[in-house]
Amino acid sequence: MNRLVIAVAIASSLLVIPGCYTPTSEASLNESSEVEGMDSNHAEGMGDGHHQHHQQHHPDSHSEHSGEGQGEPQKATQAKLQVPSAIAANQPVALGIEIQDTAGNPVSEFDIVHEKKMHLIVVSDDLQFFSHLHPTQNEAGQFQVENIFPSGGNYTLFADYKPTGDAQRVSALKTTVAGNPSPPKEMTLTRSQTLENTKVGLMLPTEAISAGEPITVAFHLEDTQTQTMVTDLQPYLGELGHLVVVKQSDSPTESDYIHAHPMPNRFPGNLEFMTQFPEPGNYKIWGEFNRNGKIIAAEFWITVQ
Image (cartoon, rainbow, N blue to C red; front, side, top):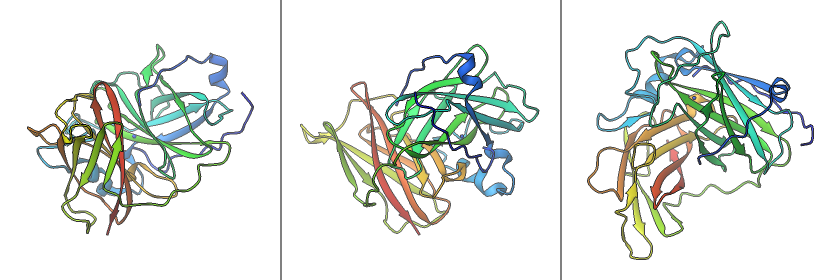
């Protein structure tokens, strides 16, 4: 692998499709760059608004930032990202994430939330690339996973985890891949996307969405062959669907990130998520579903006033 210099950015505040990991040697880890991310619950200058933004959901819905850990004592932590000093696009890259306390001591005990100890959402900063990974812990307590970055440019990694006996949190980590980024794509407000034999339609109560107001985001899944509602969705990480939202910005932070789960519904082909968008702007949303053992991720843009 060519020795390319990684542009390392420090995440601005404390906060957070399956892959496998090939262990890296101790020497290669020592040569890697580190990115420090801060926990959302202890972000300086962020105030209470951000924390509430991730936790205020409809009573019948739930997100990976609510439920588990509420009311528990919160201890400051920091997340550090280790990446090789040479990252090339379209090549497997070993990622290491270490969670530490404020004294720099490793935090090694974590609760399993939605079947995993850590969920890692990787997006390119232009939001054209999306990946949902699940790092595993090694004997030293570090989380490790492998990812392939499709092009050069800046990437944000949202690490979602819950230290045992502590609140759930999100750390935003940054890295840069050498080379040219993907050509820009025009933002479109299409409300339907077909992935193989599944048509996913996005349904909103109104296109005039106001920041800070609760809203129901719904997905209607239809089989393109039978033209009937999908009835064979299977659980994915303990849910029939996942909603991931990232606000468009030059460099997304943890305050731009939402991860929610569907409200109870007797119709598996029609899933509703209750959420709210904290600020005006453009948001990219991904609806993740498991059909016939294959994870599909439908993506849409939403404009918030």
